[in-house]
Image 1: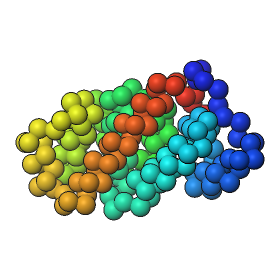
Image 2 (image 1 turned 120 degrees about the vertical axis):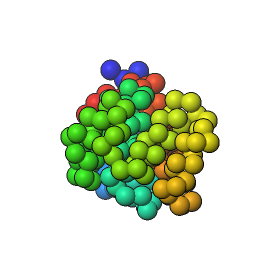
Image 3 (image 1 turned 90 degrees about the vertical axis):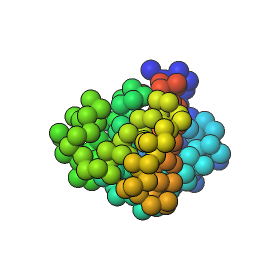
Length: 170
């Protein structure tokens, strides 16, 4: 059970924002119902996460693998359950998902393995070793590295929010 109440989404001052969230997310997930307790935070969150999920140049498969891995590392079941269907639609197979759960990236291509190692170090250690960054650099250009880094950072933020407040599953 969530540690604080979900926002009253029928408030007139949040009507336009609620409609935008429903339009962009096809629903009003509990995460956003919680965020709506602070409309400015909800609005900024929506803009940032929409950029990460829909406006970067990363392949959807890689983006979703990064999100799933962050969810595993942070024990964020809500995040994992929300993104698993998206990852499967983006081309992740069941064996790859199982590998992400275990931290076994052997079935992934070299660039994906480098991105997962980078994700693990960013999430667990914060500072990334030079060797890990060098492997990432071999596989990705500057824009992709920024987008990988922003994706990992953003979904660490999401999982920490979800877990601290204990947002309920849908």
